[in-house]
Structure formats: structure tokens, C-alpha cells
Length: 197
Ligand SMILES: Nc1nc2c(c(=O)[nH]1)N[C@H]1C(S)=C(S)[C@@H](COP(=O)(O)O)O[C@H]1N2
Ligand SMILES: [Mo]
Image (cartoon, rainbow, N blue to C red; front, side, top):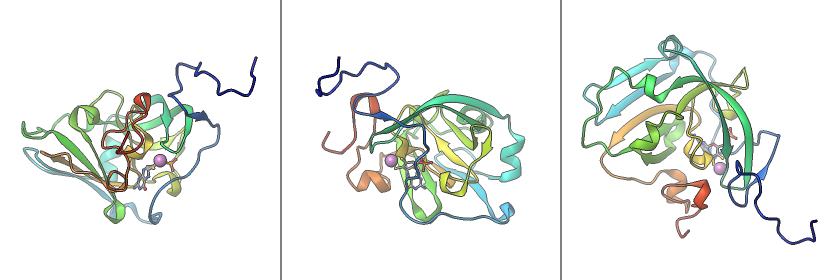
């Protein structure tokens, strides 16, 4: 029975102190970009790679398309279970590219200079992807159209919307939210919400 005490976490899919929502909240800093013409869009993979590469939107859609099913956890306390994202896995994106050995971290660059940082092994995980659709619908501008990162094992702020660049770097440089008090890594299972956690 529930006596008003905080309930023990019982659902093994939900990290500590998260509440499950069935809605899809919109959260970001800055402006939502609107594209009328996707020929003006590209994705640059650069930094510590043997050869830099710029993908057009058409080239992204020509890569192998994958559906991944996962749960997402926002640092502000909501979790959304059973998402299906469609797009290109990071593994497939990087297939024909060589990452230099000095590369230890990745910076994901979005529109307006927004960025987020993560270790290279987290970016290259099987579950990491670049998505253009959510639950069989194209992403709306609010949720990151035309392409967003989805890194489901970390708090959702690492999942850059409006992705435009992937930079391989040597050092762990904090991104936008990381500079503003969020944790440098952001493991929801360890509740790494803030830099002082
Ligand atoms: N470019 C960009 N991506 C971003 C953010 C942002 O401010 N700018 N915010 C992050 C945060 S804090 C969260 S919780 C998720 C929210 O994604 P959603 O709006 O699709 O739910 O996007 C992440 N990606
Ligand atoms: Mo967030």
C-alpha cells in the first residue's frame, strides 16, 4: 500500500527519480531552425579523422536505414519509454571512415553553435544513432528535424537536435549544458544530473 512515502523504484526500466510520461515534451535552448530546402543542409564529420567527410541529406538517406527501440530519460525528470527511431546507426555512418587514435571524445555540433560532448566509446555504441523519424513519423522541427542524435543510455541532453557536425577530439570539452552546470557525462542510472553530483 502507498502511505505517501516516496515509492521505491520498482520498474527496472526507469532510472532513479524519473517519472514516465506518454507525452513528448519539447526542451532546448535557442531557436528552432526551419528548412524549406534540404539542399542547404549538410552534416560534417571532422576533426581527428583520416579524411573529413560532408554528407548531404540525400546521402544520409542512402545509407543503411535502421529502426532502434529504446527509452529516453531527460535530466529534468521525465522518461519516455518505447520509442522507435529510424535513421542511420553511428556504426553505419562511420563504416568507411577512419578515426585517428588520438581521438578520445566527440563533440556533437547543432545549429547556432550549440554543442554537447561525450566519450568516443559512448558515441560508437551499437545503440547510438542519427534519427530522422520517431515512431514512424518524420521528426517535427521542435524535435530536431531534419536529423538528431539519439544516445539513449545517457541523459537526453546529449542527444543533439538539428545536428550539423560530428567532431572527433582529444580532450573532453564541455558543451552548452555541460558549461551551464550539467554533468560532464550524464549517466541516468547513477543520477549524474549536475556537475556537483
Ligand atoms: N541542438 C540542441 N539539441 C538539444 C538541446 C538543445 O538545447 N539544443 N536540448 C537537449 C535536451 S536538454 C533534451 S531533454 C532533448 C529534448 O528533446 P525533445 O525536445 O525532442 O524532447 O534535446 C536535447 N538536444
Ligand atoms: Mo533535457
